[in-house]
Image 1 (cartoon, rainbow, N blue to C red):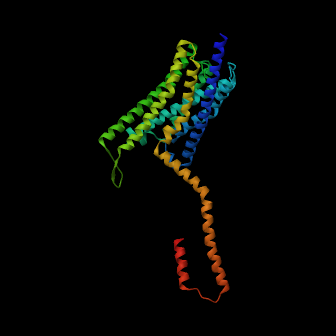
Image 2: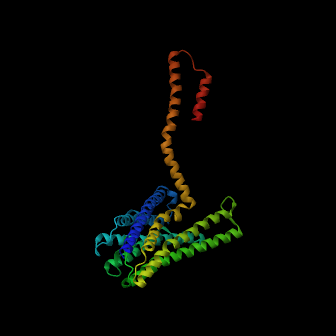
Length: 358
């Protein structure tokens, strides 16, 4: 029994170490990716459309996850924390933040998918459907709903507790909390994921129909043919989004239902891996949902070029200043040495040419 116990403890230590390493990488990548997306959107006015607050919402949610919840899990796994007091403010606050930010992120992504779906499938009435005022109402509803669900365990409907198998304070997946868990997983996670997968799947279906028929896009000057590779790239992005959503959330959903209905904890490696996948979505979201789009790539490239020019501009301008000052000094010296000589017509023509070029 002692040998079996030692092997189990050794396995738990390795699992905790792997989980900490994965969370460290995910936290760094999440903070970097969401910070890049946030800066690109804030500094590029062309991206600030009526619906850009939806992007800002899931970007801030994922950034907060990378700054607050992930470091908490890293600390617990590295120091092998066995538990917190049931009413600990740190544990309750961390679990509240985990649930609030995850719900806000996934519902903001869902409405961003609805926005994209409406823009493609209802292009003529899109401007009237998604106005700036309606987007503000949508975001207020998303955050109010997320806040309400996350606050329920604090007032007695459901509970938060520290999970040794997840190294985090999370909703308690126990039969006593079956009502809250079904509400949280059903309305908060499963339905938004199904909606996103359905809308992205229909967009892919429409794109492939356009490829078979061929598409012409017209503006006020002329019409031009849209090549099939454009639709192919968009389809790849949509399919990748669907696959990532399912891969990252299905293990966590299965574990939630298993622990809630059976009353038993799942194996630690499976629980840790499922929890990491859910947190890893905050790293994938900015790149899959925004930075793969052409307009975001162009804005990022434009911003990088401006930063590069800021560092290169002083070195480029220093050389012309020296070359332009020297001829002036020489001409002044020559005039000072021979003041009686009249200016020649060729010199005036050269000056006029320099002025014209300048």
